[in-house]
Image (cartoon, rainbow, N blue to C red; front, side):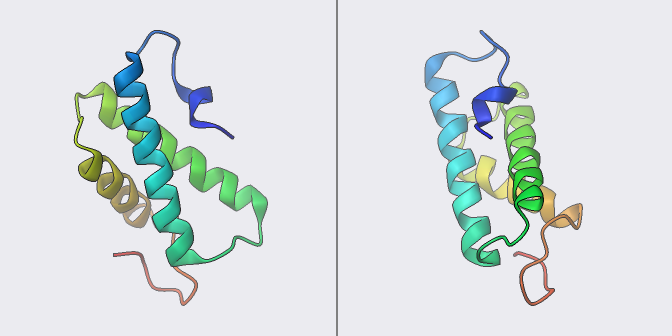
Length: 92
């Protein structure tokens, strides 16, 4: 599911939309690198949605730093216990 599904039309200008999209893709890449391939596509879709929503929320609150967007979105998953890694430990 693309992140654009969660973006309200006109909510962000094109530069911010690209920034949020890039942060989302980088966060997803880090998650999949840490967690490996997802056997359950529904779980993968849920995690993608949670990442997208968090990054958009941060964007709505004015965050424009790519690294903080990525790290905060990943930390939010860990905090919610939504994304333990394959060994059962949480992402750092």
